[in-house]
Image (cartoon, rainbow, N blue to C red):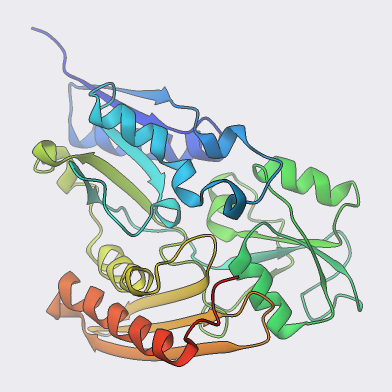
Length: 307
C-alpha cells in the first residue's frame, strides 16, 4: 500500500524550520501512517535583506512564493508566521488551522540596558518594524531608530557588534529557538500591543483540502478567536508594513477582550480603542469587533497613519 505524503512548505530560516518542525510533528500524530516532510521555499523577503519591507512590497514577500507552490500543487500545506500573512486572502487558499500560540509580546534585548526606559538619551534602537519603531518613539522620542533586518541570529550579531544599543524581537521566536533567557524585558501587550496575531502560526491549504481530518487536531479555538479579532483590525486599517498597527486580544472567563492602536510613523500621535464580547459568539463576531475598533481608529486618525 502506498504511504500518503503530506508536504509542508516553509521558509528556510532556523526559526521557520523550527516552527514548521513542530507542525510536522503535530500532523504526524494526527495522521498516523502518513509521511510528513518539509519543503523549503525561498521567499523574496528572505532574499532581500538590505532594505525595509516598505520599499520592496510589504510583508506579502514572506508568503508569495510559498502560496504559489501551494496553488501549483508542489506542496500540500504551508506554515506561516500568522503576522506575516496579509489581511486579504488569496483566492483558492484558506487558513484552515491555527495552533495554540506562543507568547505574543515583544521582547527587549540589550547587552547593557535593562529596559527601553533605561536606555540613555539618543540611544540606538534596532528594528525594521514600523510599529515597533513608532511605539518606541511614542515612549522615547529621543531614541534613534536603526533599521535592522535579518533572521534572529543576524540581528543578535548586529547588536553585539555595536550597530544598535538594543533591539526588539518577538518573544515567541526566541522561545521557539530556546533563547527565552535573552530578553531583559518583555513589553506589556495591553499598553503596547504587538502585531496582530504575533506568536501564532497559520496552516494554509487549498480550499478543497480544508476539511482534511488531520487539520482538526491543529486548531486551537481560543487562539483562532483572538486572531480573528486582531486581524479584523487589520482588514479595516489595511495593515501593512507601511502602517504602524498593534492589536492584542485575550480570551478569559468566557469573554474576549481586544485592544487596538495605530500610531503616526514618528510615534507622536497614538489612536487607541478597546472592546469586548462574549467568546461563545464566535470568530465572525470577533472579526467584526476588530473591524469596529479599526473603523473608529481610522475615522479619528484620518490620513495621519501612512508614512
